[in-house]
Length: 500
View 1 (spheres, helix red, strand yellow):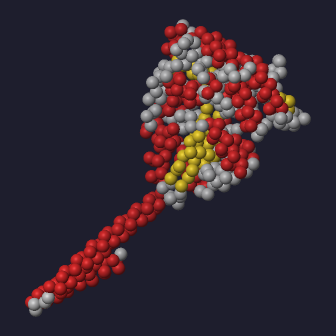
View 2: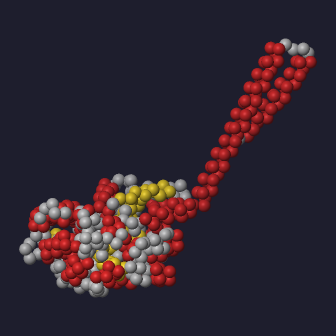
View 3: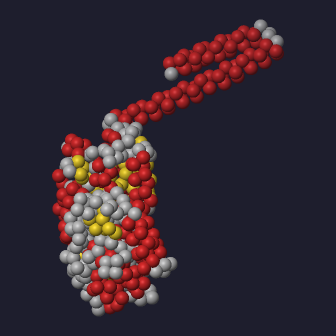
């Protein structure tokens, strides 16, 4: 910059000398050629001076920009300037993390977050592939209790225990104990919960009142089926149930029904390994549960049930196109949000049962750090913020959904916030009751292989088996094959991994 200013000074002096030479030449009767030559020199010198001044201004602007970047890095801390790629599920309940991050997290931290938002089954497949092969495309991934202990056991994830313990603002002890335990293997915690959930029945109270129907607080599946058939009409379906293929889509809701009907995917061998598949036997609780599920959807379910999962049923409830919905408790916060068209019209009941005392699932969409991330400290800074008490306060005050729509089930302190207690009065206690009742250690009537789980069998083989089998089941729901053919096909698939 000093050099630029020096050149400008010299050029101005040269212009002055040239002007003096012009005066002298005119006084001495110089020729026209000399005058034209002098004029040309003056114009050339002026152009060079203008160019130098422009260069000086550009240099000043660049210096200011560099200063701004340096200031932002100083304000943001050690991780400022880092860039993260974060894979999350696309289910409506994660919208707030995408809305708040660029407005609040990035300006404060200096860390840029690029979200990759994927449909549930696609997310599971891509995250499993990336983690298992060591691909470095994601710095943070959204997973759940099925993946966390397995991936951690395989050394695919960073153990977050020390990160959480050493983060004075995080308050790891405030995390819901069952959820924290579900994301851990022994003393090692491999993910932190963004929100947590069980499952229950959500219903439109106005539709029930108009039909003169009362939904029990703790219904059986037979009672729910009778109600659904009673209120079903050409304009409003009696119930919405998942039918989209995927072990975490159709597989999640169906497996809870299988459990409470006394069924299971496999027997457990004495050593806990995968025993004989229990899908298509004549007296199988699995067969009875699936026949019941398909018949209920045929009689009183939503149109195109084979293509429906959480997002589709959520929209149908908001549009008042279905009277009831059995699904994740997190949906209540969206349905009761300040911007929801049916807020205040809903009632809630525990997950329906058949022969067990409880049947609701236990799940959390949580953030984890792949072992091969290039930015572990920046990744933890984002994960800590997105699952913190401060984030819940921010979501309650800054988002259109208001306090009812903040991430539920992850922190005990959420349920002590007065604003949340008021906004979530109709469903908060029901959500906690459903989570506490979730039979994670004993989900059915028979032992099953692997680690604990309700709406899945926590063995590595289940991801492939569950996905392939639900493709067969979804085809039966759509009417493209018989229930018997779907069960027989799944029996063959599940038997591929049986041991002994």
